Image: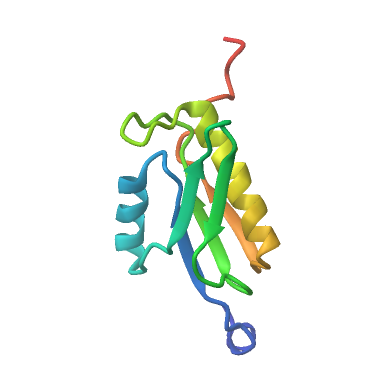
Length: 114
């Protein structure tokens, strides 16, 4: 990156984890030298997913770690993981994040026809 681009760039990187694989997100955060951001994720009794970022993400570059796999410990299946990611993206855009990137190390739906 050139010096002229760096001068005007003061955004921060924020990393958040979904419930599909929080251990992976923690390892990624360790490699990057950042802490995972606080986020509230829950599923209501009617199976609706709720997402709230517990600190301001306005103007930040937000990375959401959520593979499309199930996690029996948190009760999330592959379908729930995908929907949870979409709800997280929507909440981040609504909270005025500068950029939102989904980190999906495993996407479970590309080859259903095989």
